[in-house]
Length: 237
Image (tube, rainbow, N blue to C red):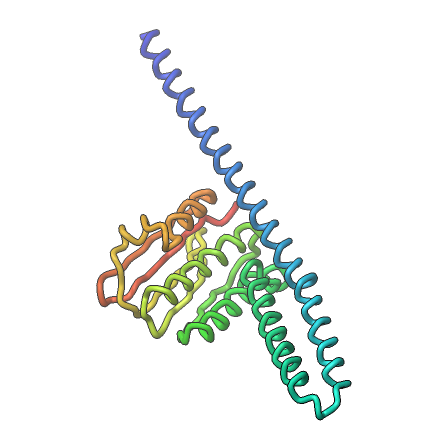
């Protein structure tokens, strides 16, 4: 009996150690991801406030130089106007890249506003009709808001690239202590197992990131029947 009790105690100690190790792994994983998001935020700010402002200044200076040229110097005026147009296009690309790295609306106005902005911008860029349905949400910490935003961003990117869809539903609801993000499209469908293990889809990384927060990723699809992605994360106590 003493040997059996000792074995039970050893087994319990092993389980406790594994659980502690798993919690520590998740804590470290969340810390690494937080650092990555902070770096994204810094780069987005540099692009917007640094490169973006410099491009704006260059554009204004070129316009001022153009205004001083005589009308007879048509070739020089045309070259400067083309350069101003190129500068304007580059400025818009820089701003768009800054928003994709870390949209200010996520930090300033929160998850709901960020998801509505994401749906609007992705819909315009990809000619998708994206409907957004967001239920009543409790206060969410910054990490959880970022997590759900990144999942939605990756899902919409995949739809735009691969699904050949025309309409998408993005839904965020809270049920039974769980927050659920669903993204469903009417596209050509896919093999869920192949998609989850494909390096090009980003779904594998999305699933691992959700696991850091004790969440899970579900993917339901069939050829010609569209795809439904669901991310489920428990709300913090």
